[in-house]
Amino acid sequence: MKHGDFSSLADDYAKYRPGYSPMVLSALFGMASDPKKDLSVADVGAGTGIWSRMMLGQGRQVTSVEPNNSMREQGIRLTRESGDALRWVAGSAEQTTLKDESCDVVTMASSFHWPDFDAAITEFHRILRPGGLFMALWNTRFIHSNPILVEIEEKLHSLVPNMKRVSSGKSEFCDSLFESLHERSEFSDVLYLEGRHSEQQSVERYIGLWRSVNDVRVQAGETRFEAFLSFIAERLEGVEYINADYTTRAWIAKKA
Image 1 (cartoon, rainbow, N blue to C red):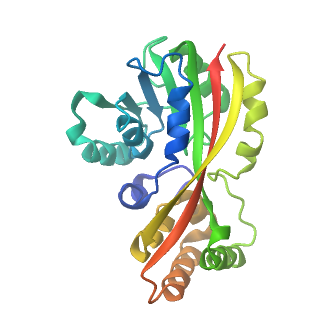
Image 2: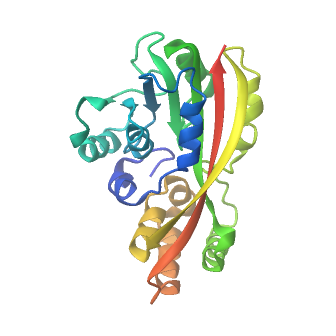
């Protein structure tokens, strides 16, 4: 398995991945130039459409752009009943295939760390209308509210002591993202915000979430990764459900 290739993980991703903070979603559209009008929204690197479906639930017209065929197929399957309100496009952050100045809002949910940063910024500036908004966001696990989750995290780091997260909202990429966006002439008025929400997860779903994580799986290798999943299954034997908290970290920038 390669970094960023979710082809074999698409089924688990579609079944088990958590959503994002509803307050962050409301904040994004509250900052739009006219939040009551019909906004043209593009969700780039949409994966299986978790964030796309949340925006769709706000009554938005959404174009979901996804380069991976397996992920996009899962997304199409999950949004079949959406009709014309949501359309899927084969494209990437570097080449969305969307028209010049065709979007009021462009988002990348848990995916902005994968593309070429400079090429993606140039592309988003091209497809955004004047004053349009770009948001990059990640749903980061907040484990400290649950001692069991802390124990599981410690086990992971004991199995893979040199692991350096790439796709987490706590990565080095995210730590410097505010300045990286602030320095770009294409965007202005950079804002950072957080929101938190909780989910009650079955053990099956919790393990499925780990199975869908490309970054950890690649760095651990299959042997250590399976040992980690076995530890989780044993540790959670007899547990009915897990209370999991998530912090949505979001960076918003306005087209200059």
